[in-house]
Length: 132
Image 1 (cartoon, rainbow, N blue to C red):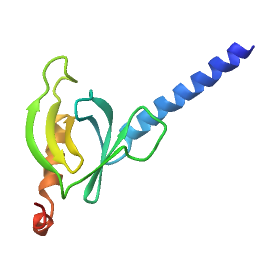
Image 2: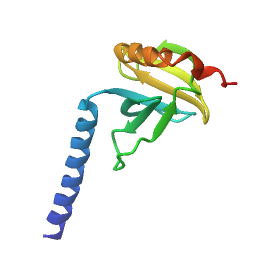
Image 3: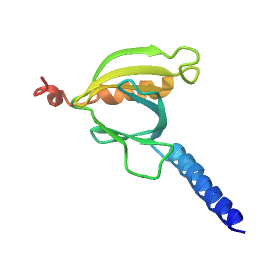
């Protein structure tokens, strides 16, 4: 009986995590995006544009707050390339960026990449005056 209760509890938590992932992916204004910080592997999640920041929330986790809040002001794109086979989903692009905390790479679909670059370029002209 105890094993059945443990199984039911684990199943409920797994179902809630799956529902959370679908809710994040389907929420308005969000794009599916993977993040790689430093030498770590790709982590799947959702990116949302919030004013002058890009918030990234992982699919797997309990927190609803973003794991990465990337400010447009200090963001510099150094390179973009199509992901190779076995490196990530087919048709995704990797964007290597420099942020205040160090190097960060984003992987997203071509449509999401177009939106990301438009968001980045839509900053007011004065936004980069004090960037060094």
